[in-house]
Image 1: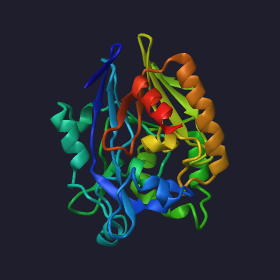
Image 2: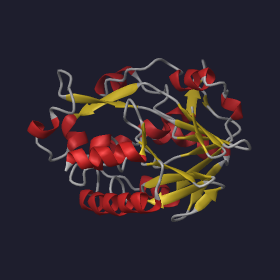
Image 3: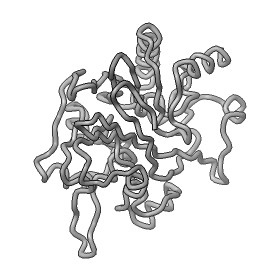
Image 4: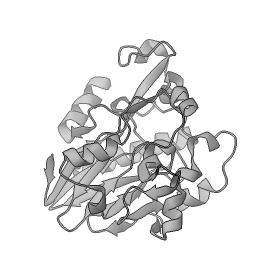
Length: 278
């Protein structure tokens, strides 16, 4: 646990899944990234699922909801999913919380590995919300984008997994960059998707930036290291440079990378990595 001003920051876990190295590292040659990563026999890399819980005292805000349990055997094999069923809820329980206590669930975007855990099926195949008392926040533009997918973007979404949120009436669509909860601000961070948002968390002058999939791994701090799955890679490049400059200019204290096994880094660690990476 980390204390960020008056907020408690709790790192959770929901296992991992695998994607082809090219999907993660784009045009970067293997000769450059091989020293950073080890692939499996199918040239895949593990993406860890590390939802973030922020306890403000008045609110218990979950940032992302992992992949959840609704995938079938074929889906599990394609993505090499490595996790226990209900792993996120067990991780939450180990931290001393239960699903009914979650007041808000916030998403950077709606790819299945970020929002799959919002619902589950009971023994009769009926879908239920995993966090029944929460309100759910999404970027408004991402919701519109999700309604008009094409052959390239469709595989990353599962409308049926998210449908219980829509049916609940608890969905909140946030327009543009906005301080949508006390201490929580959506930052425009397009590139991975046109309406992707990063989330800046602030308390008592302390800052934590959750990058989402704009910077999925530490190595993606390097400007040219851009995931092959990004829909607008040149936009990713410009977005990263602008937000990293702001992070250093404003002295953001902590950086959170959703797909890292160790997701949380201090500003000093980030600076040290960038200096070595030059």
